[in-house]
Image 1 (cartoon, protein in one colour):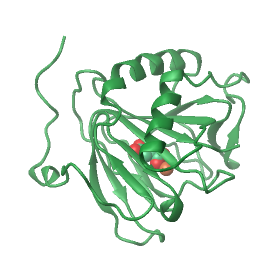
Image 2 (cartoon, rainbow, N blue to C red; image 1 turned 135 degrees about the vertical axis):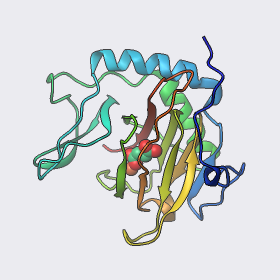
Image 3 (cartoon, rainbow, N blue to C red; image 1 turned 180 degrees about the horizontal axis):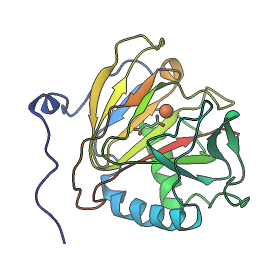
Length: 221
Ligand code: SIN
Ligand code: FE2
């Protein structure tokens, strides 16, 4: 059943919804790029998470992340008391991460190409699940080996406010609304930009209910 009420958005959020947003050199905002594949991506995501369920990782210092995570691909991003790393196996089970579904890989490569990054062959898809109140503080993606390769980030389900900062953690971030199907690709001069996600507002999305999912594709190995 399709529910017709969109999630409630405060008026200032509407100002962040122009079709094209110029976030500077090396970054491309692709509004609605993954929309045609939304249902297929979510169906594959459900299968991946049967084999590798979402979990709240606990980072150094003992803090439990508010975003629940899992991975697919030949490597997965893992946080624990010893730090962050890419690991070929799920530490929960000792099994390899589930294979990256073709629909995941295809969307990621097409988005990278659309943003003028050739030769992108992701070996990791980190899957983030946000519910109301979950957030991701400003960080750089910097555990990958080759910074010439971009990051491809696909948003599904409830909208979220993406925080797009600068090369220093203290640069004041821009606030960009990411909706179901939006894709952001960043690389080159933007590869180490600080970014994060504002605390998710409660909502009910016709395809994902109370959740927002984010697929982050990387070439890590
Ligand atoms: C991340 O930076 O890993 C997540 C970004 C997002 O959820 O949009
Ligand atoms: Fe990130």
